[in-house]
Structures are given as structure tokens and as C-alpha cells.
Picture (spheres, rainbow over the protein chains, first blue to last red):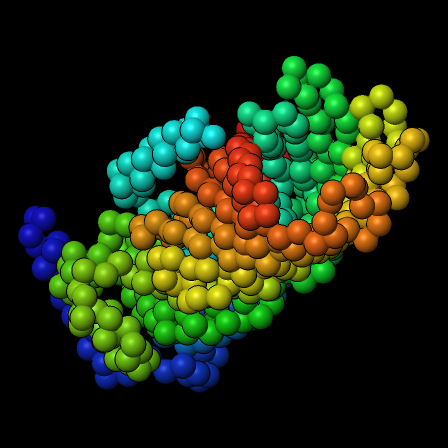
Length: 131
Length: 391
């Protein structure tokens, strides 16, 4: 059973890698985006970022569930909120940034991994799935 | 003097033993990378010092800055917007010291204020540091985006959870997760994503060393940049006064300036810091009756601080400072005293624990052939959050 699971995981990843290699993930597939957005319930999502003991900056990118299309992109150069009004269950958020002290990211909807997530001084590279 | 040398030698041996044993990678903070000499010039939080420990003029000194005291009462000040707003207060140091004689009796009170006119070493408020650090991490940022984009395309919920877990481990775990320990499909995926975004440096890194930890590799650019900033210019000016032991009247007022600048590449395991001090002292002329400040002395002390760092975490372990000082008496010269005087000085600073330094100062007067020694203990309380939270 475990072996079967492993094989299925490998196959899934292999298929996905092929997908990546063939560059099937379009960065701005607007036609597909419009269709998907119309079908799913919109879940406005606020990403609250707090930098302490120093400054920081952060960029968040929202990728559409299944298509991987970019449907949101915003940046902060101080503590504050990034709001994606068009987020849906299954979308993925990519987070990149830097903090010279500490940073805490809190998202107001259920995510995997759950928030808040804390970061020490350094580069920030992380991501969440909206549940 | 012999006692001091024996104590210092023991501390040096102890320090190197600890440094050899402790091969763990403690997190590098801007504070942990600063030299002991820097912390004597400008302190980020609290410093408690016992100066001239076995000499006749002992000093128990407390140094802090107004921001640290305010943050202790209001932790909201640590939030970036306030932290930046009050940056000038963070550049200000004040200190109080009680002077004690050989019998530990009160022998005068010292107070001083120092302000950093230029402090380019403070990365915590540097926008240029942030921009440079973000740009230096470009490939990892793009790799993270590509990885998240890939995760978004996984339809199977169970599979997606697994890959998300792997992603979090790769980008957050800086110790156990190495590239070669990831399963083959994940390695192939990362290589495919890196190829897709043309992350040539990253691909080269994993080719040279497949055992790299991706998180640690991405932090290297940040750490290197931070070390480069520790070489930048720090210039402080200050005023210091001492009272008599029996009257709240100044027996000495000193106006000072101190400049620090790293000279060698800070990424090396040893570095040299240029340290230039200037002082103008107004002192009570003890030859004359009454209490006044008619004796004025100017001193200029250029020197170099040689910093030996741990190769494991780049923390300064031992520092040797060599300087020469030139003194000129403008007024109130004593009988048989020369207007100009030259001395050679040396200070050895040993980091006993993370925040405790023991500096031994030695002064040599070539004219008189005298050697003076002072031993001090300085404890820096750098953990701002710990202190704010009262832990």
C-alpha cells in the first residue's frame, strides 16, 4: 500500500515536472482565469505583516488554483496589509522579502501552513495554500 | 600587573576552548557581529561595566539609550514604523557611573551623553541594506515563486499537502534539509524549476555542492551583506562630567569625539578597525586653592583594533587595540610637567560569554618608563525583546 502510494506520488511529481518543463503554466492566462473566477466563490484575503526591531519589505504573489496563473501581486516596505480581493480556496500565495529584525505574517483565512508564521532577521521565502 | 596577565591568560584559554567546542551555528544578528570596541563606543541597549577593577579609582558604570528605556515601557515602539521614527533616540547613549576608592567608598559621580552623528553600521534602519539584500536574493525569490506556482497547479489535495510541507521545510529549515537528501522527484522538480527561471547561480551551487541547504544558501547573501555593513563608519561625539565626592560640583568636563571604521575585508576571520579618539578636558587645577575648571588638556588618540573572529559564526572573540596618544596641556600646567606628552596604549578585549567582555588596558609612558594597567568587566544586554518582555 505504502509502495503504491510512493509510486503514485512519483508519477504525480513526474507529470508535474513535465508540465513545468513544457512550460504549460502560463503566467497570464486571462481567459482561463475569467472562467475559473466566475465558477468559484471569492474569498477576500488579508495578509497582515508586522516587522519589529528593524525594517523590512515583502512581496506577495497570488497564484490561481490549478492554472498557476498570477492573479494578484503586491508589495510592502513597512508593516501593513496586503489584500487580495479575488483569492479563492486552492490558490497559492508566494511570499518573498527581507527583514532586519523580526517579521510575523498573519493571514485572515485558513491556510496551509497555518499562520501566524514568524521569521528571524534575514531573507524571507515562503508560501501558503488557501484552504 | 602579574595578576592581571594571569587572569587574562586564563580567560583567553577558556574562551578558545569554548569557541572550539561550540560548533553550533548561533543565529547572526547585527548585534552579535559587532566588536567589543564598537559596543564601548555606542551601545544598542544596556551595558553594565566595572572599570579599573583592581585599581584605586574603580567605576561602576551603567550605559543605555533613551529608546531602550522607552521600549521597556512600551513594546509597541519596537514595531518598524516607531523603530524608524525614533532612530535618533537610538543613536543617543547616556551613562551614569559611581566612582569608588580602594575601600569601595563613594568617590564622585560621573554622567555622560554620547550621540552617533554618523552610524552607517546600523542595518536595522537601512533602506539601502534592505534593497541590496532583496536584490541579492533574487534567484531564491524567483525559485520560491516558481515553486509556489507549481504547488498551485497540483489538483490532488493529499499530494499538495505533502509538497507544501516539503516546500516549507526547504525554505525554512536551515540545518537538516539538504538538497541531496531530498527524494529524487523533488530534486528533479527543483532543478526543472531552476532551469525554467534561469537560476544559473543556484544550479551551479547544487552542482558544486549537492549537500547544500537551500535556506542557508539563501541566507548567505544576507549575512555577507551584514558583515560588509559592520565595516562602515561610526562617528560619535559626547560630553562627560565628573563631580566631587562631597559636593555636586563638576571636577572634570570632557568633550569627546570617536571615529570607527573597518579597514580590511570584513568577510575575513580577522579584521582591523581604525579607531580615532579626540578629547578636550577641563579639569580642576588642584594646585590652586578652590574648585574650578582652569586646567585644560587636549588629547588625540589614533589607533587600530585588531579583531579575531570565530570562523564558525564570525563573532568577535578577542580584540587587540594598539594606539598612541598625544596630550597637550593648554592651561594649568603643573610644575615639572611637560606641555606635550606621548603614551602608547594597548587594550586586550576577551569575550568570555556572548555578552560579557573583559578588557585589559595597558598604557606605556616612554618619557617616564611607566606602565599602567586597568582591568574592566563589561556586560552588554543585547536581547532587546528579552529585556522588553522582562525575561
